[in-house]
Image 1 (cartoon, one colour):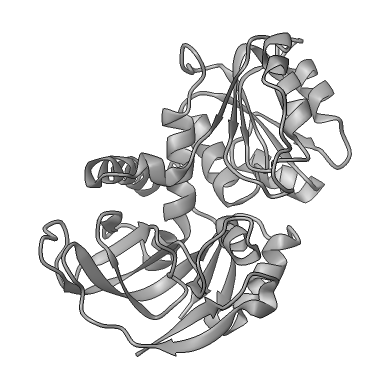
Image 2: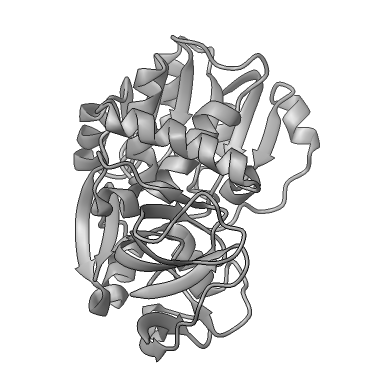
Length: 327
């Protein structure tokens, strides 16, 4: 048996209940993992509220770390006793033990502890695909300006540090002076408090009127229009979240008028569709974290029993860095 967080209908944090579930043996291509820690992410909120629709009932959670307890037929990259971490569909990591597909489960290097492994997989792999695989025409090179919204969040703080490693001039936005200071400390070349400043005007000032090559935006509705105006001609608008709500429909013709812009809406799990691509991305993340060049900040820890409060704090934007649930 395992304790697991489940919802029976979409709604607020109060819909999440801890239930006892039966955990069986892994089938072909599956593993059973006993969690040491579980990561919390905004996609969990989207699934809980129904912005991302899933058939009920749903067990929430997209990343975790722990010990492999059993391995099903056909799984060759993991064995019983391995330390492991993952970001994965289907959801279900808010639990003590689970059976799940092995494709996106990776052996965790000894240099990385379980809390860090649980905190960094979904957010770190997202930063990896954004900075390494979601690129404007001609790519990015050292010295290029990029705009990254929510730079003090879980993905943002990893991306801010990684961008510095790559030599990029990252302009980070956040909603408070404290969050801006945190982003600056973690390597942002420039920071903008969008609660006080017009981020479009500041981006134009910072770039000498040129704009940026790419905007990485997980905020959505509130930042969309001005973000397009921050771009250089042929620039890329990379949307990867909806923290303020989904972007309203728009006429494609405005992209031409604003400088022949590109728009993309990517998902992590498209990039992680194969075992090979998953491992390559994870190796990239493990290397940069183990080297100390990117540090994973875990600023909030909640026991599993306080999952409702964890979601309330995440939605109220009271959190910085990464958040984990402890078991």
